[in-house]
Image (tube, rainbow over all chains, first blue to last red; front, side, top):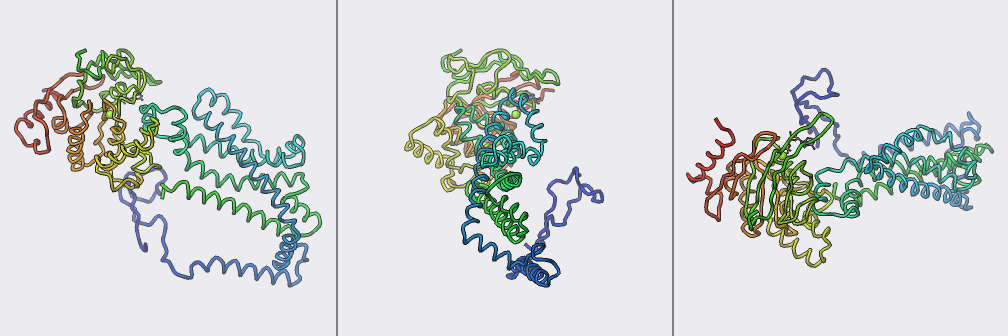
Length: 285
Length: 254
Ligand SMILES: Nc1ncnc2c1ncn2[C@@H]1O[C@H](COP(=O)(O)OP(=O)(O)O)[C@@H](O)[C@H]1O
Ligand SMILES: [Mg+2]
């Protein structure tokens, strides 16, 4: 790999070429510099993390900051462990997870079918697009209180917030995915007298799948944000509620422990979406 | 319409209408394809060959005139007509095997018969070792063989080929012509093939039709009385060369 060069395929100057470059001459600098593989390269990132944790511990223990401002990492671990062992982490985590997954399911389903309709039907596209664009311009955080008023401070309002937050990116992805399908493949299905259902199942869905699954990774993390936003506004359970509660009682270790759990949740969902992509898109490898 | 005619275009004209104005592409094209004949269509690029093929396949409506398959007018695509495009047009998420079997799946053929036919088609197209390969890993020639196999697998009576070897290099192209001759000898279909190559047309066809520049009309209908079975050896015979010369002159008069 070392020293491999990637000359440009096209010799013509293109938009975005750097001004100094002579047109027509292939650029012989690597697009991505590659490094030689060494066995200890995987230790580098963990080492940095360990150093930061040690410095944080020293700073917190030195007494410069009160523990409700900067609790030591060991305090956070202890707090996390106490929450985990008395079951409250599980309980609050489960609530947030339920909101996140229900919101994802509803938001993605709605976005997919509406996107499909808009991509296929011109009347639907012209009628709905202005409203969808306008709706997208509203910051979800700003309407969260409204949704709480309308749907109560229980799980329903959070599910709706999650659904709304994943809806627009997924909608755009679906439309792009459907419109990117090669017209020649549509002709082929047409020539083979495929029914609309067959065209959907054998052409439209698989052709759009890469874009849909790429969007799912983004949506999964967005959905976690949606749940926390909702729980911040008003809730009696959930990891967002736990963060709010910790802040109110100056239990900063609790805040950090809950944030840690939330990001682990988001990362896990991202990982699952990546795994799904890996399994379903084996033909791209 | 003579009795052995299977597909006929009757006085077809076509105009693309768009915001930039109208573009007449075909002007009273009449042609008849006899059953099991191999006809090639040549003409300058942009003269409306692809448009004509799409109309014959039922993918596009002519502005005036009509297409008949046997006696029935064609208003929409028919499984009895297979079509191969310039690009192999394979589904990248399907293996060679399941790209080939797609038409059978869509026709809801019983699984055992699907398997039998697909295996036979893999063999006919020389792709047996590539059944589980995805299209991304195929060469241009192999991909086009899959496309031809896919068009043949459900046994359509008419095969329309739109410059199927247009994107291949000269050597592969010649080899593919040979393969097509071999396949056609086994599965006698009615074939209409658009090509850019005059020698290719003469090598393959019983008849070569020549189209004028846009709007396309058929300006020459040249029979090719060379004996069959043919092979690439034909390329050097004097009567072959004489026919290519005649064809060349009819395309570029003066
Ligand atoms: N969908 C379309 N809309 C408008 N014009 C088209 C369309 N497809 C082809 N054309 C134009 O029609 C003419 C004939 O095209 P085509 O049948 O593809 O020619 P050929 O296959 O002989 O090269 C060309 O000038 C082309 O630009
Ligand atoms: Mg063409």
